[in-house]
Image (cartoon, rainbow, N blue to C red; front, top):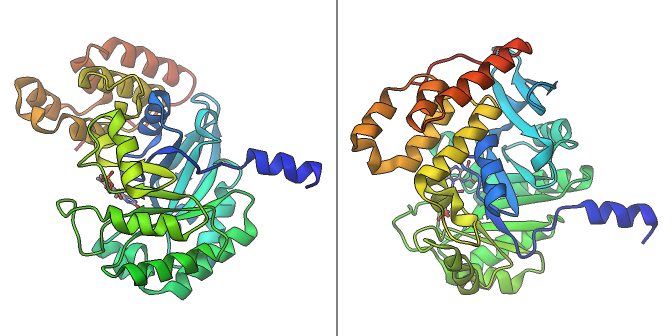
Length: 345
Ligand code: FNR
């Protein structure tokens, strides 16, 4: 290996023996990703970003926030915001059905992120109609074309996240074909396109995939059984996988990534809000994420007060962070960032 290739390969993200924040629409924005990293996640995936939406954005360095922003050309809203702290550990997940579009987006963000993932598991109508997500499981040639083009033209690793088929043999056939494109790892949610979270996760199928492939397999779908840190390794052992990816448990309490044990929910919300303020996260996205943490606690008097909040400062005030939020917002305004003063729904 030449010196340059050695340095390059060292810089490349490894997917072996990792605990990973799963891609989650609206949840996996910058504050949640940074929180997951603070608590101990090794790699964080972005929410799924649809290729054509990304292509309508422009890259801007935001000196005040210390971020790189991809802003929607039509209305200036943030399509994707990232920062140095996560640069070598953030993977952007793309929703795509087209190799050329996928590559155009990947090229746009290649220097700002650590990896690119292709969503091949989303069972929602919107994805399926557009030939994206789980639709790709049934079009392996197209799936392979997308992955091959990305692998051949990017200097960062490429992965995909799939669901399984009823038939283990069909699943093994598919993953071997996907592996042949040169992807660096594969995340497997152990449910079929038709199955929902209440159905058992097919850990046995993930185990067979792990045995059959030589790239790292990232087991996913275990949140029902992952209630504390030690459950992560149990799930990993059950799946015989190299790595584990967590969605729902992290959505409700991101401190699941902490080796020392989970934090009290109010502490987690405060940690989250600090990042939401520091990175000028939109009130609507912040509210959505806190709502998902509070769940049934929304019925309490404090929860009801929270639901009435429309601004970031109002949300922060409930956790005694109103002053912090106001000061930070004034600081940003004085530096020329007005932020989006949109109200939460
Ligand atoms: C998801 N999931 C998901 N998957 C994906 O590939 N891209 C995405 O953008 C999303 N979005 C998303 C949002 C929310 C709120 C949830 C709860 C889930 C699926 C997720 O990544 C994961 O595959 C499943 O939730 C199963 O893993 P857990 O929850 O058992 O750890």
